[in-house]
Length: 156
Image 1: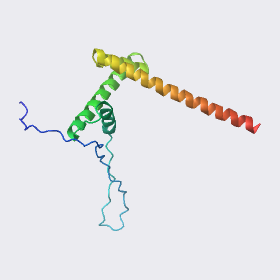
Image 2: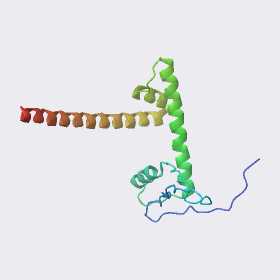
Image 3: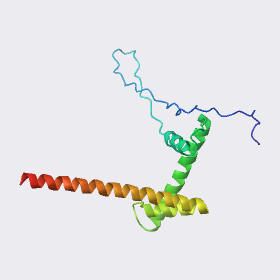
Image 4: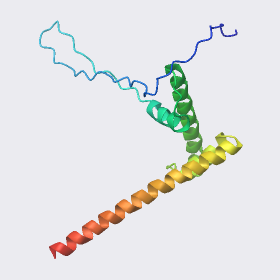
């Protein structure tokens, strides 16, 4: 059955502001003092990629907004791609009798799932991110070891 025709509607823009984050109420459970009192439940937080999607949108198109429906679609898209890559990487690790998914499995999964040029760009960006992370960790370890060495020299 074809989808129902809907009147054209322009997406709402945020006017240069970030979309309002739906902050869940942090109501704490109250102890029931009387038998008739109800216990209030804490509202579960819904984690999304909305803030990250918005930041990337502003880097690429600073004067463009995004509607809530479009943001929801983008969030679903990111979740779907994440699940596909994770599932493929898991299969690859199992084929190689490994219990840990490494960056190599992720990279291979990306190459298998994404088409052509998109895969090349994704692998390039992923490699860049991993390199940045490992170099920052290395610097952190060097600073920590220098600090520990200076303390051992001071105490002796």
